[in-house]
Image 1 (cartoon, one colour):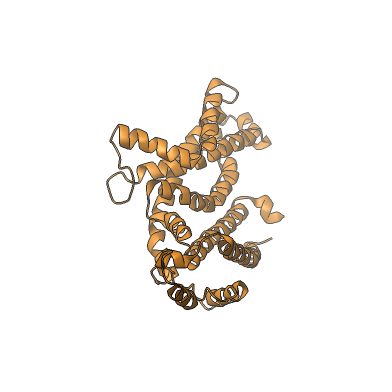
Image 2 (cartoon, one colour):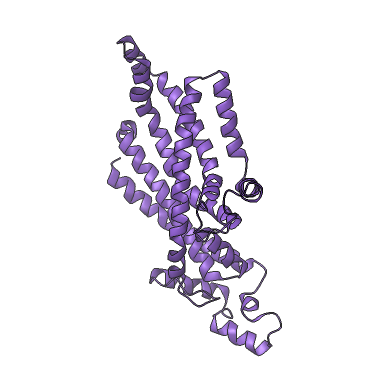
Amino acid sequence: MNLATVILLRLLQAIPTLLGVVTLVFFLLHLVPGDPVDALLGETALAADREAMRHALHLDEPVLQQYIHYLYGLISGDWGASIIDHRDVLTRILERLSATAELAAVSLLLAVCLALPLGYWAARHAGKAQDAAAMSFSLLGVSIPNFWLGPMLMLLFSVTLGWLPVSGMGQPGSLVLPAITLGTALAAMLSRMARSSWLEAMSMDSIRTARAFGVSERSIWWRHAARIAAIPVITMFALQLGAVLGGAVITETVFDWPGLGLLTIEAIQRRDYPLVQGCVLIIAVFYVLANLLADILGLLLDARQRQG
């Protein structure tokens, strides 16, 4: 299967996936208790004012009619306006997307810088104490949730030591704690993948042949085995791009980082239906693109997939 065919098939598969996400989120939001009119006018507002506001926001229409109206808007490029401040949804998302992209980029860089040396060290000392220590560290990174790790880092480095800002964006070092919180789990998964891939590559016939020809161990590990081990690691890295964006929702909330994740939580709390739907749709699009990127990288790096 060639590259163009894979891209076309994945794009076609993305259409029902995104439609399912939009549909599920739309109806779940309308099942959640609460009324956006209360967020705008308060519970003490007059009934006439409440009804007028509901009519202005089309909330007095049947849910199915609202859903059809929303789909038509998406198809025509109109993502709607925020119920709270009446600003364009797509404009608000784009304003916050750069902060999330910055956090995600630094987190991914940190994860790679930690995972590759740790995975190599564990593979080079497989079965020894170094291997057990490295894998214990990675297991700890996978097991600790972001909503616990973030406050603990904040308590230690911000409150106790006073080295870094507690929350927000723009201060020196404000990106450090959120990036560590978000990148730790990814680093743990990548390091385990790197270890297993390196060990699998070292057991292949081509590596034994290289040893028979007198190639040095350093060259075998970093030139021959590393190229083979990189294929599953890079593919997994691409798959985790969407997961990093989804994990940013929790991390940004903990550190009050003004990105897409915090915007999503704020919109949910205010029952801002169009804004929530827009934020979730963007996250779903990134998940689809991450899977597409993983498929493309797999075809480019692995000749067996191209032959299949």
